[in-house]
Amino acid sequence: MTETPPTDGASERLPPRTRLGIGAVIVLVLLAFAVTIGIGMLRGTTGTQVVEPVSTTSSTPQLPAQVGLYVHVAGAVRDAGLYRLDAGDRVADAIARAGGFADDAARDAVNLARQVADGEQIVVPVVGAEPSGSTPDGGAGDGLIDLNTATREQLDTLPRVGPAMADRIIAWREANGRFTNVDDLQSVPGFGDKMLAALRDLVRV
Image (tube, rainbow, N blue to C red; front, side, top):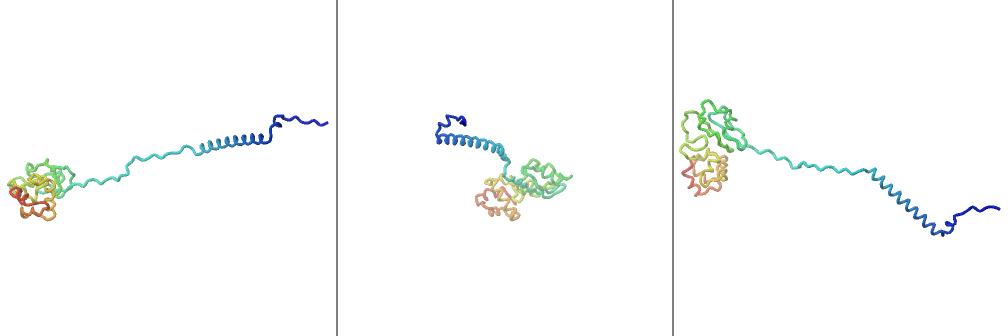
């Protein structure tokens, strides 16, 4: 007589649907475990994201250097001519650019400490020279301001004339040449009869 192999009595007691449900749960657990492992491996292969550093250097283009001013140095200097100076330079700097004083220069007749202005002429006289009607710094020998040689600073000392009007006088002089008469000031933009009357006895040409 053939013996029947022993069987698990509990499993035989479970209905087929229950056994199918337990199998599905096991499959889902295995799938979740596999997904978790896969995600971990993916993170390990991609590595940490590298953030590029942001440059702190300004992208603003560098502005060009400020243009200097030009001065005509004449008279008793070693190399008279037109020279470019920096803003804030003084008469001493202009004369140095012109090679320094000549041997016969009247050095005490020039104010070396004065700041130069764009477009002015610095004339260094020789020793013993008679005044020719205007001083090296643009003033007249009779104490009047010469409109044709005065600097911006000297024109600014006149009544009713400020820095802006002084610039207009110099600009007119550069565009039209010398003033031939004090009345020519009326051709300067913004110059009226009252201002002319206030300056008539203080300037010359």
